[in-house]
Length: 333
Image (cartoon, rainbow, N blue to C red):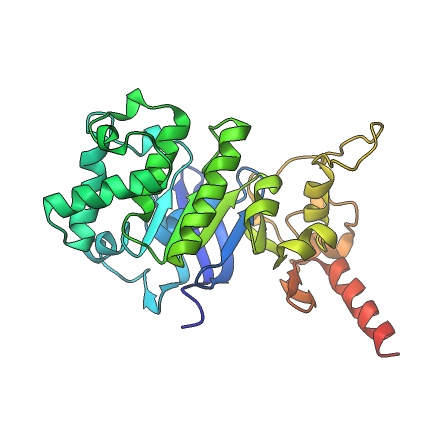
């Protein structure tokens, strides 16, 4: 099977006091076995809601309105909760931003590790214990046997995140969703965790869906990148092309806002003016219109489509489309 995860025209909505709000709007992407796809964007762009929609972990006031999410050909949006429970942690796992909200503070690390292994892999108590210790050893935790008897509060942030990685990968899932997995960690620990996660997933052939706002992590980890803004995909391409030749003005703004090692000392970082519109799902035209240096009347009146602007490169921008057409005309005379 070419794609282990296929998301097509996903739309997720929330019920609020002001009515229905569409948080994820017409999002589509594919993920191949062993591949790392990063979803980037500012807070509120819909990254985490996309991940929670895939996992079917949305709250009572939110729902998938339309679209398809297929894991190895199985449609997840139509499964009942019992079937989803068998898939979560087994064929698809998720690492959350803050491990203290994911680990149960009154249960030992060993109990939480072995519970998932016994449930999904049908192993006996002794075998599951051995598997858990082995995974804790693989993620570089000291004294893995003793660690099984520890409670989450006794561990540092980096250790807790390593436990979360061990739990997420203990059943050898086909897809690992990592939602800002290193946000709460210091920079040196971040690098260790990301390297570890990449190595373990490559070893097991696990595909990674990485949710992040950190473009440094993207450059280090990703094969392809999906840029989201105001609930929509605005650009998608491979990681090298994204940093070398971004087509959407929003992506260009994100890249200009990060420091570069080869920059001279006088170079000032730029910021994107304005803020994400609050009721962006009610806008008629381009959702980046109020912050874009290329915006014109056409952008305000009509929503641009996500179109190919170069081979393997798509962008949701009228100006990027025009530039691509001009480049094509020039190439063919």
